[in-house]
Image (cartoon, rainbow, N blue to C red):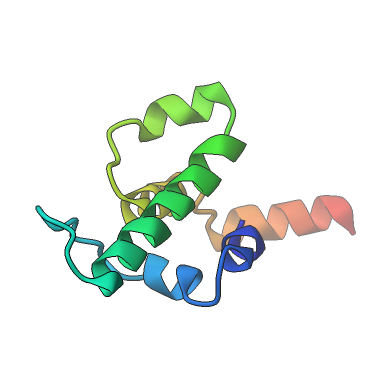
Length: 89
């Protein structure tokens, strides 16, 4: 996912790490770019998820919120990682 979002533009992934605040009126070129970055990121996340996962993210209005929620849902502790590695090796 990170690689795909980076492919959308040089600054897009860096922007994702920030908390986006949508302005009431988009005036400056920078505000337009931030809006576009957020829209591209949200599209990237939501278009690649199965419907069962999409339902969990429908309340998210910004890409950063989607990323944070996905990170918390798929967070794996060290015990789980170890057991998965033991199964592979």
